[in-house]
Length: 214
Image 1: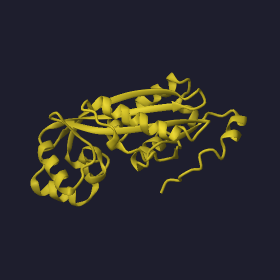
Image 2: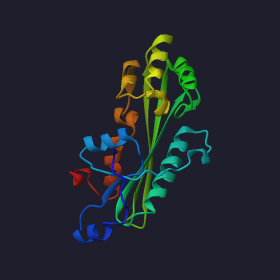
Image 3: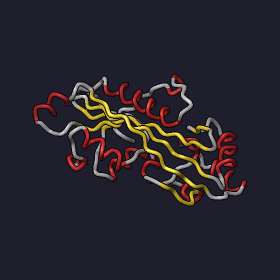
Image 4: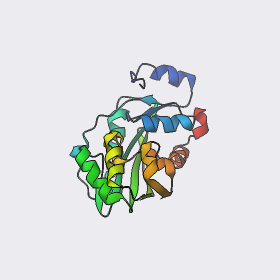
């Protein structure tokens, strides 16, 4: 269970030490936190709890960037010395936008459309530097995912595990869902929750180096 932090408790001390700002993940996603840890970035976790239903947008790239921004902004207001990252992902299949399925029945119906087809996984990234008057960068990464011809039995069994119910697009590449992904075109970490190569470039644009967190 990630540590939920008290935002302002150590801000002044960090500034005095002159160290790189703390890295805050505005998400409760274990997958995103694990990706950051894999890249050597230890993050503090501060879920935004932003109500995603407040945003209505039919363009998937715009949608994920707006949601990522709202999440990051909600959390950034609590910090004075931090880099705050907000992310949001959706899968677009045949003109439909898939977030997390609302029920097992919906997950099964989506998988029946996805099998033997492909979808584009969009992840919005919003990075706010609260040390620089809340400077914000917003970017989107897209990865094409090709799905296997899963049988009705396989789909039912996969949905019964519960994994698809907590994932945008009804699958987790790093989990059991990896069995049903034939190939991807583009950044693979983007499919898991955030694009590490894109994050490196965003950090550089703000004047930091990802290796500062090693």
